Figure (cartoon, helix red, strand yellow):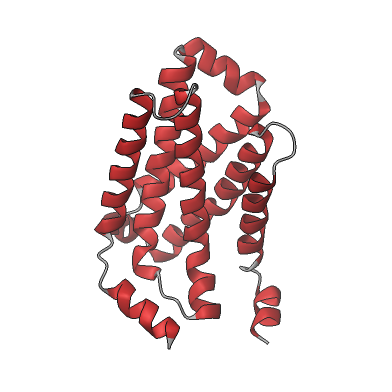
Length: 201
């Protein structure tokens, strides 16, 4: 009964609402950063906020199929909006770091080469680019459904690299980044038929 109610409510929500909500939130966070509302390190706080929200959306995107399969909650119609929004927040995360924090092309390249957590983060970002570019019906038709699905399996290494980037970036042992990493590992593992059968039994 609860699941039916949730799905009924979800059917009334248009997918574009995700884009609108994310854009308003991102603009609000930027406003807070520009007006002193994010503390003494607004650039770092803004960078972190965009990156963490992107990772949350990636986790949610990975959870769409398991939620439907094991709980009956249907978020399929929102999956593309979730993925595209996650990419643009990753892009915002990168832009804040590159433009407001590092502020130099040579230093950006030096950080990518010399700092492993930056290297991993950039690898995750690079893997997400073809997914964002092909997240439209025209690309599905041109690539063919099977090829399109294979391409979009890049989300799994991208998500894993993003979580490792967050864990590595954290100073000392912090529980929150480890939770994201654990969730992503679990959601990827759920793609294996043996684990699916065990959970379904």
